Image (cartoon, rainbow, N blue to C red; front, side):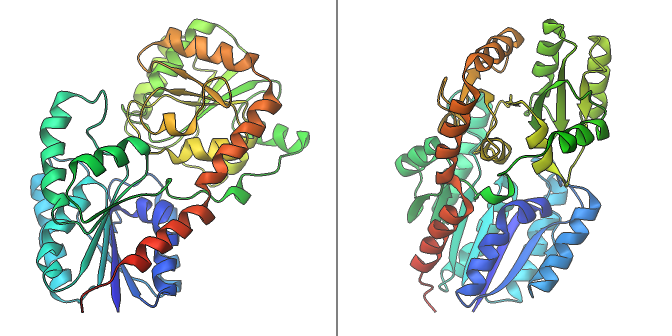
Length: 385
């Protein structure tokens, strides 16, 4: 029996799908992977090499597909479509598990005729582009596409409650399932660093040992909205407060320039992709997640697993994880003043109370819990050949 896991980028395979591959292998499937190994990834080339080595060690064959996340890259994605057709023509998959908008669309179009031969197609929506408060153009473009393709889908998996409710009501997949995220390895984020270790790590990234750290983790793009926190930091005029952003992206130079223009360049630290992110959480004081759109943010879940108090934009996904004045506070992602208000409010809440409540909530999103649900879904699939 063969199965294939398909995503737009290699980093999505690395971050979200290794457990799915392992579960399918335990169920007796020979698993293959298809994704773009060279464009659009949120990790550096070294991590891509490590991923390839890991897949080889797991006996997983992989294909480099020309997926582009940008919907305007039509010619490139036509190439990806042809590559997928060739892969399916030469293989006989019983399970096809795809995700992300572009790769999910192309895969379901290609795989549909194989459903007539008994293959089962699963699609994980990591956050529909149409959501409460989304721009009208998102609804006009993405909703009809997802609605049509839901007819081509045997199992539609959603990872937040808003998407699950909408999918149950509007989509036509044979089954709609809710899985609480992609699964967090809680053990990776428990424990603490000694004062000496904290001092060393702060010095490593250029932060004074007595500084208070606001941390964001995510790609440097417009959706992640790090700019609003930088503007709030400039208004606060607190030299002890430092904003650390871990991630890569095309807005790096813009954010550096903005920090300089606002006079906070010494308090804003763009530290890129990190292999030591668990330690970065542990030296931080408050996690900030200012995105305009999320499915169910992994970075926020990791921060919660680390026991950090969180201030977050009031959007889909975030509202599944944060409970006002218990483990965090919400703000309007378009208002730096609202960021400041949320920051002051979270500082007034007892830190131990926040940590205890946060740890209680995040257990529902553990890798163990998510893997149990994924196993249940895979076992419930019965290919017709």
